[in-house]
Image 1 (cartoon, rainbow, N blue to C red):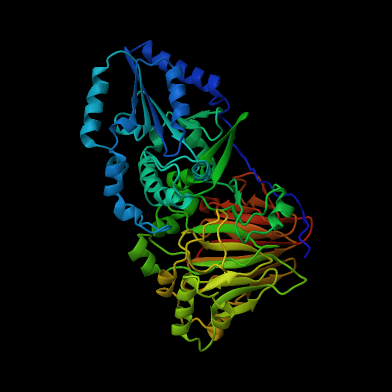
Image 2: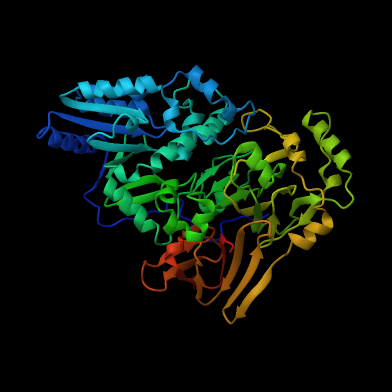
Length: 586
């Protein structure tokens, strides 16, 4: 199997330069401290008291920012955790959202204020009012609930960095669960903390005087609220990339190591999230300072421009399309799995829509058979299959997958459509571009080939959930009629062919593949576009009206074109290219 790097021009740290704010960004403790001191002293030169509000996203390193606050020599510091409900009370009040399941909770509808004792917040406001002189610092998650103060600093962090900190032992907010499994911490964050914090944050974007990023320990970065908002306004009108992240897995392979220049000492890399605004970040550069901004901020602050009116009207301020990479080159099969039907995910987990998806074969081994498992076989005995899945879950037998599930041969550039309810998994020695709806943790694993996770613990299996969602009529005949080899040619001219490759009519995403040696014009049609260069060294995305600078995209990179761009050109460079473009179907 040859997986040697093809072009080796993948950029794992893409940046977007934001001009006009070069004097509104600071890096390092001395520079950040000096700017906040200057601002506070300016207020204190006119008033007896200045209030600095350091409002945290859950997961920000509290100790580091408290040290920064102390260095400003405040007359008083107010710690928000002093006004929070106890961990015991929070666990009780949020239990229905946390649940007893290892993986799945229920999307929490509460507000950030529900983390706090109302009487204590009222007393804190009175305490602040009683402090008539000097610098007062309010610091912590929800600090703005007491007062946004005279200087409002929002202290953000990316979700990926939060997950890395969980692995190093960081507990959930206001919890003592440092030793809890990563799945437990992630579940509480995904279903509760991030939901409440995002609702709170998006109501306050226009109030931020500063935004502080503290991803790198000991090296905070500060930008003005004006620079933050200006950066998001620029990004919402032109093509951009987010910073991807990569993670190993029990089935992981080596294609990304070879093609993306990832650490060759790592055992493998299984996943790459390169097109998931809920998880990825934007690297915005202001002069010499590059700040990591969670991409979800762009979605929540500029949804009309980014998503388009019809997409925003349907999904609200949520980014509905997800691109990620699954690498099994030299690895193993993914777990055999199924995703919940729409009504099931709504009723059971409180999600608005479900995890419909597809596999685009970015690459596949050429010297051996490659395949995906897809749909049940014609005439399958569903009772026998259910019985064997349950026995396998108990460890009594290995599940005989090939007795019940189709093994569909695949090759490079095939596109397999997987509407929710279809049993499936990718096989070994494939490189999959997964093009899917955004909900991404709702995978009911049915059989994991007898493996344990990288932590040595068997990965969670959800046979009961899965059996309630498997669509038994999606058998051999159905999959070949409906979700395998469904490509249709939309246009074929010299130098440019456009094909519709998916998705299934139960799925809201449309995908088109552009095979080009000449430039092709594309209309956004009031929908955000997400694209990946699935073949060719390089392409440019050009504005039709000159509203943005030409944007370069390299092999296997994912880029986003906001709906506000309206019309753009895909221009091939250095020979033929293939670009897959996804949008929300009308």
